Image (cartoon, rainbow, N blue to C red):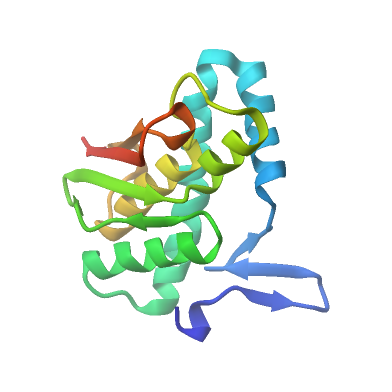
Length: 172
């Protein structure tokens, strides 16, 4: 990641930004506890909300970041998004099978899956909702799509006992 696209620290104001958006770093303990609290409270409505929140947060940041980068090909935008995701400690995501119509992505060492298993053990269903939202946001930015046209869901999850985390991104 080039230096001008790295997070920017404003020590006087005590804030960090990425792509012109404020950034807060949390460990997996905090993130999975927050996610579980939301899932416990909202039950079956939680996954949709968590994916949407991940999408909006990432889409907003990635749009700002791409403005700074002065872009390039959609594939390059997706790779920069994947590099950003990894640099923030969320895991290494392979976006090479994503295109204008969506596609598949795989995630190694998912922050949420590893965190969940280390705290609570196996989940009954996939739970990397932020990653799903991030991928939807990345596709929306890369192909300049309205966010409501892009959906993403995790189809395999290490936290649910699968060998890997994989996602299906669709464009409507």
